[in-house]
Amino acid sequence: MNVSSADVTATLQPRDSFSKAVTKNLIVVVLSISINYINGSLVHTFSKHQIFYTNPRYILFIHLVVNDIIQVTLTAVLFVLSYTVYKIHVSVCCIFILIALFTTENTPLNLACMAVECYIAVCFPLRHAHICTVRKTTVWIALIWTTSVLSVLPDLFITLATQPLDFFHSRVFCLRQTVFPSPLIVQKRDITYLLFLIVVWLTIFYTYFKVLFAAKSASKDAKKARNTIVLHGFQLLLCMASYVSPQLMDALQRRFPKNSIDSLFVIYITIQILPRSLSPIIYGIRDNTFRKFLKEHLLCKLYVH
Image 1 (cartoon, rainbow, N blue to C red):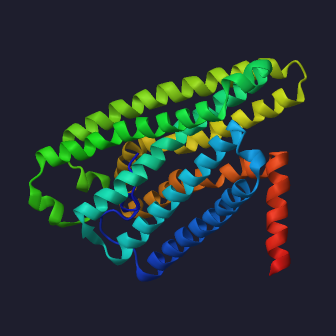
Image 2: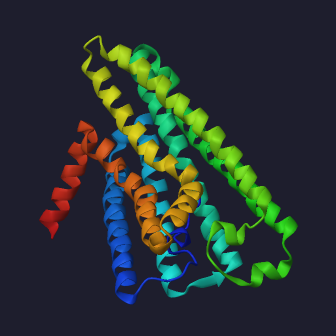
């Protein structure tokens, strides 16, 4: 998951014209503010109603939303910086890239946990309250972060071991490959992403087919859970496309050398921005309980203004 706006602008020539650069930055900023405003409303709605605090489904959902807010904000900042400041200190870039990587790798793991929760709710309804507790949910969230940290931090340790100290005081175009340049990191990344792909997709497919068979019993909740997992799968497909984004970017650069920057911009929007706009649809709109309280919150703000 090469998470950096620099992946979009790259160091290729020719660079964007002034008008095109302004247009792209406006698109990114407007989309980011819009998504974060909606997600911020979801977080506010969650925080104001005790009913959500005791439901593992909503806890996992709001963790995903907060994670999305951090990820969208960071990638948007990196995007704008790549056009304005262009080069920043390696130490600062490391912090940005590490946090962006943590939050990006969290997303598919969080979606897998939410799919498992749907599966348990439909296939084991009598045991759901015992299996899916608030305490166990916080443990799962801690495991999500631990997995992401253990996946990403070796990049920093390898760089510290292989690069001179002066490297961290230099200024670079903020890319994952410029701050973590060791070939060992690329090999580790490919192996890690392959493992993530296998585990997460097996989880999604297993839970989907189990819920699909349960939905044949004409249970309304089972059918809704099945549709939810389908949406999770689509969202996951977009998110996990970032696993193969380095190879996809290289292929596009070779295929369309004159339009590579525009192609990479489309990839950035598709892989980093679009999946983060689906979370509000899956729970903020489709879920009756959340939709009710969210509508009250938005109507209240409209009335105040």
